[in-house]
Amino acid sequence: MRLLNRTAGRLSRHRRGPLAGLAVLLLGLVVSGSLYTALAPAQAQDQPSATEQVAQGKELFLVSCAFCHGQNGEGVPTVRDGYQLGPSLVGVGAAAVDFQVGTGRMPLARPSAQAPRKPVAFTDEETAALAAYVASLGPGPAVPDESDYSIEGLSDDEREEAISRGGQIFLTNCTACHNFNGAGGAMPRGGYAPSLHGVEGKYIYEALLTGPQNMPNFSNGNLSPEEKRDVIAYLGSIQDTPEYAGFTLGGLGPVSEGLFAWIAGIGGLVGAAVWIASHTTRSKKNKVNA
Image (cartoon, rainbow, N blue to C red; front, top):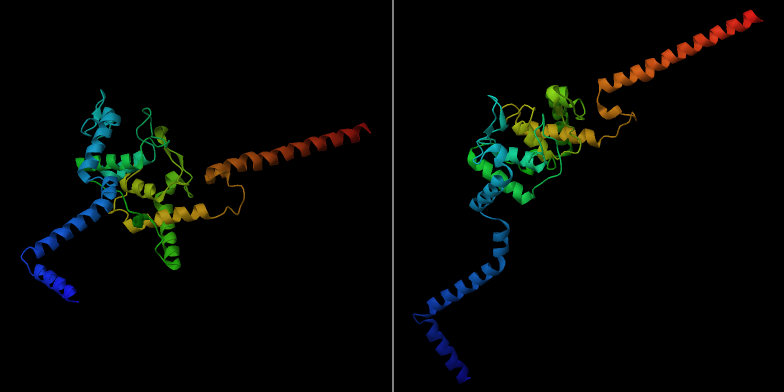
């Protein structure tokens, strides 16, 4: 018992010593540093800093994009005045890059009236790096967050209202090119409005925001973020709705329906009229001969 008391007394005297506090502080720093080293580096490596991301994007840009868009994204003019091999990317923002590269439209395989959607050439990390580099060239629309184009957090009544509003906006502004159910259609000078079926909500939002190819851009001053979200909700609802009428004729509206009516409907009536007339004439001849 006396030994324990003596040991406790010594420890108590050491705790009150001038070096005790420093030793405890150093021990705490060593423990916290060890824990940080064990847990934090993996996350730090997976998420490069903004400067590193821009530098990576610039390297990718110089290899894959500079031929058409210039080494600094200034665009490359052609011998014809007013025409460019690739437009300037200064000020288009990260959203435009995410749309064009994320849907495979860029890099462009060959010059054409419109950039078609094709398999993606870059990974998500590389696309984000390219978007960060182009965004550094000048201010422009940022890549939207999922909350900007999704109605998942809304109640059932709010979802119905959003879909209804989106339908009115789409039918007013978009059906002239994409037709009433988003199936797409032809445009002048070799262009076309692509089908919106199966397109991710993020890319529809970015297309509305940036106006790719022949499409006009609907800035937040023209269509608010909530209205863009409502349009996306409407497009999702018509894709989920079954076609109760059966044969949809491609969903192209009055063009395909009118063509079917002329060929199948009126063509069938003409065929029936010809058959009736020929049958009547044959019957009369048989009566005369008899």
